[in-house]
Image (tube, rainbow, N blue to C red):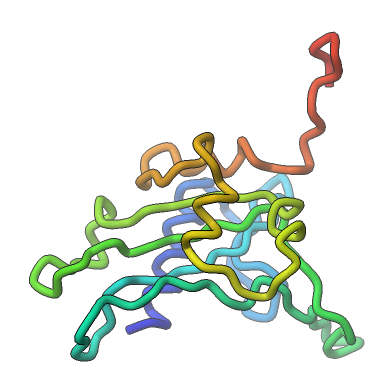
Length: 165
């Protein structure tokens, strides 16, 4: 089921980052690390639970959202609310091989908020994600996912010309 796939993708990112924080249902992001890195997880698949003539086109929506707080309710404007966006694709293309629990069937792309904001859109295709990720963040499996997410953390300042942060 599509909603279960998304929750499983969030679980995988949570595990990859070794976060001990629990998920807050109304938070503006899906995963938060112990040091405050906020991660939004978007999941999609070529195959659905129902019969299909052709695999689905991969598209990720909800990149911008209105934040919510118990005191103020929903914010008026939609914003990009995470530091890093992880795009998870369950990549099986044949129903006989489809196993969402087989992490070798997943691809992950991690992009920093500035890269997502530069796109200026609420939804994005897998083709656009791949282009924005470039060779440095090419599709990869679960192994090393936490390190790849940390590598694109925009909160970490780039070293100056002498190599100091």
